[in-house]
Image 1 (tube, one colour):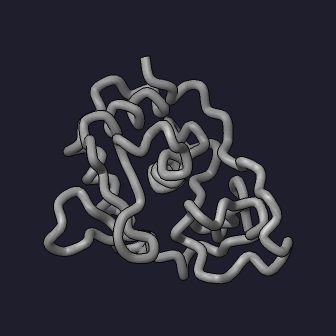
Image 2 (cartoon, rainbow, N blue to C red; image 1 turned 120 degrees about the vertical axis):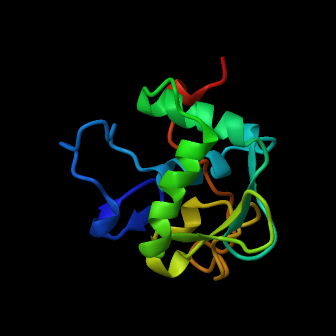
Length: 150
């Protein structure tokens, strides 16, 4: 398995580093990064059920994704097309009847190092934090200056 910040993803979830334009991150990893950062709660946020999130500002999420991938003409239509690719892989799916709302299928994502995640703000963990007895948890969000707002 390959390991991301506090989360291990199955090997099939990664593009080879040699893929043209991959920039070593996939859209769903990027979405998880945004969801973990408080400064983007006005743009994208966890909502409702376990693993469900809403894109509050689709144009801004698309702009940030375009910055990250060096694709200045990125828009929400292109981004949503990329999200649909993950439906067949069962990584995530659209929440029926809710606009701009999706849900991760975390049975396809193996979580490791629970103590490193903030249990209070991470709805994608069902288990209690029994590894460290609820001790304070460090911020495990990767530093990505290229997605900072202009």
